[in-house]
Image (cartoon, rainbow, N blue to C red; front, side):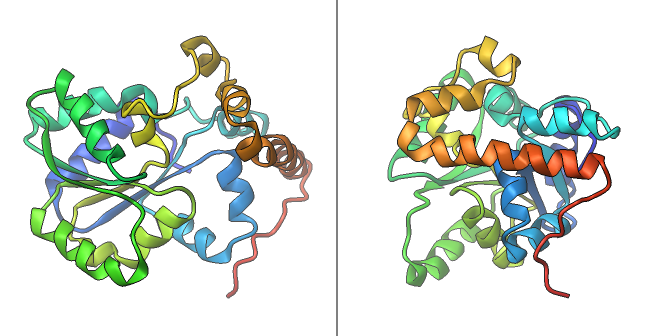
Length: 243
C-alpha cells in the first residue's frame, strides 16, 4: 500500500491529472476489501497492478502499526472530497461522476458545486447500466475528456470495470470511490465526526443498515482480525491468484 497522508494523496492525484502521460488507476483498501482480496483472484490482480492503493479504513491503519509497517493516517475521501474539488478547480481540471443509482451522481455534483462554483463537472451517469450499454457509456465519457473520472459502483465491480476499460476511458486519472456520491448527495448519512475519528464509522453503518451490513462488519471484521494476527506471527494467508 502507498504510504500517503491526505495532502500527499491530493497532490499526487492532481499531478497525474495534469501530467496526462498515461491512465492512472487509484483504488482503496479497507477491512472488507482486504478480505475480498484473498477470495477474488481478478480483484487481487487489479489491486496489485493499481498505480495507487491507499488506506480507506481505520482498521487497515491500526493493522499496519500492529505489523510494524505503519501507515500515516486513514485517507478517506468522504472527509476531503470538497477540498479536493476546490484544488481541481484551481488547476482547471474537470471531474466526471460515474456511479450510484439514477440521479445520485448528479445530486452529489450539484451539492459540491454549491460550495465550489468553479468546479468543472465533465458529466454524470448512474452506475446501474446493462452490459450492452457499456460501450456507449464509455464513448460518452471519452467524448467529455475528463481529467479525473470518479467511479462509485462498489467493490469489486468498480475496480473490474475501471481495469477493463482503463485505456478506452481516456481519463488521466480513474479513481474508485465506493459509496462516496451517496454521502455527498445526502442519500446515505455519514457517521458523526467523533465516530469517524475513533474508527467507529463501521459501527454507525451497521446500526443504520443492519440487514445489509451485518455480514460485512461482524463476520468480515473478525476475519480481518484473524488475518492480521496470522500475518503478525508469520502465517499469512495466500490470495487465490492464479499464476
